[in-house]
Image (cartoon, rainbow, N blue to C red; front, side, top):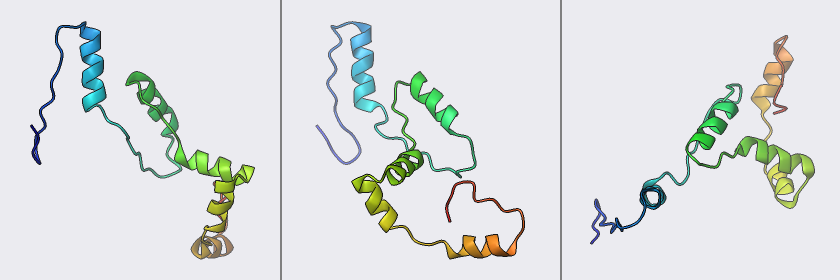
Length: 106
């Protein structure tokens, strides 16, 4: 039975508690968690630890994209071709002293 707000989920309770827990995790657990953050915030370690604790997969999309672009894979070439110039950053670097482009965004 299913409507827009509820779903009936039959659950076999004549098995081990581990099997029941795994079934519940599979049915109701998060499938994808997206963490949006400023690149300067060190969230990789925290996200990796959470992934280990809750049996999830942690994938740094920023690092993955960077790897594809640097290795010039087919998808990396497409990503590099679709890159927009960041004129604001270029102007800021030219006008202000001491600004570092640590993520090589220029």
